[in-house]
Length: 534
Image (tube, rainbow, N blue to C red; front, side, top):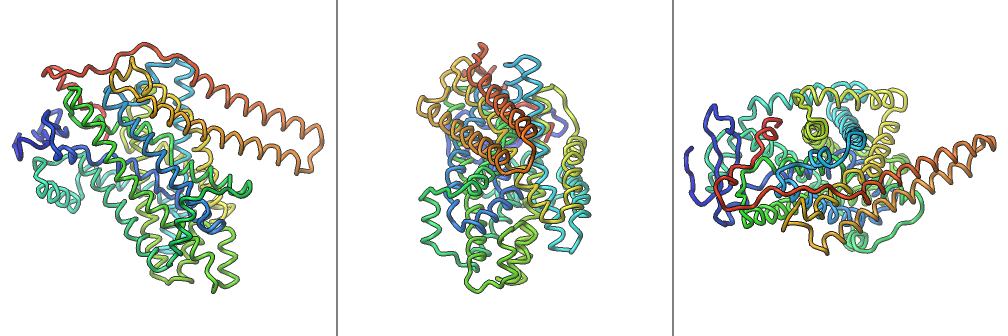
């Protein structure tokens, strides 16, 4: 192993070694160690700027201008806290969230949690399929339903290119950066190639929307007012708020983040673990800040364009039911043709990068809950087929408007499913027998449980109000109304009971990975099986 800097992090790059993709962090404390931890946060941040986010952001801006920006701020702050807990769980215990669930729960609850996690991954994949199809339509005038079919092939192609190293640009770019900071050995790391590819796509999106923001010229005072003055007017705003929340904080992201941190070889001393948790928090904060600014830009652009004084009647009609596809035509008419192309490039980057991270999240979920491993291309094919079927049917029957509504529904499903990943995470990271001295501080526990309670409360409020509205405003016979009411409220009761089981069930006694300065424990991480799935 070549030594670039004895004080900085290194790669183990021995050819043929089983540990050729390990990123090694030395025991001594140094700011350079931060570069070893840089990467997982950007893979996680992709879920905060996927096509589902763009769809809900566009509708929020078109319908309520800047009034729902505070939801993005709250969701981003909550997301940072929650993601840091997921990273801490992996760093401290050496196991990711899905593996903890398998060890903690009996077969039936474990299987049901796996099923819920898989549904969440498919629900997350639906906006990515539709978003990529819309992007292909905007760039090359390909019909949406054909674009839906092409998304499966495009993602498999990107996975193949990433897997077999046919990315000379990213390879040379990441080597240049690492040489500048003098923190790594020059090596061919599969983990690093993936992280730099995704980071490049994130900054591509950011560049596109910064340019859009400059030309749409939203009012800065109104944007700041929307960010810091909470308001929620009507059931429609509540539904959009839930969609925004579901599109921001996704269940599969918690499984993904707790697994990605296992790709680093960190010292098992108490100081080494503490440093890893701190640097992962900073790294996640930087990545989520970029995602936050992109989301604010999308809402601001949509709000400014749809509330412009010189809109034509046709453009106003588009704003009333704005989706990803209509946004392209709207931007072209109001801002210029180049604007719609920029939006399409950002949407394509979002869809492809989100699919890659979703595939790996599915890998870890299946491996953790069921101890079953699949090749990335096979895992992607299974998830993508399940997502393509409803997307294709809706695109053929309902067109782009129907596909846009399906994105909103998928985002709401993610919000409803979030507690089934969030509650176990909060329970595990608040458990001293699992986390040892790195257990959540009392204030952090209180804050995270408050966040979880608010999410569950908003979901229940929306479900109950929607069921009541459906029962009151319909033309069904009384018997059918009573039957639907019993069915609806029984479902709500089962939902609450399931969450209650996770909340009040006592954790099993489990010890964390030992923290010691002895050399025998330094070799415990990283998890080579986690690296091999990338």
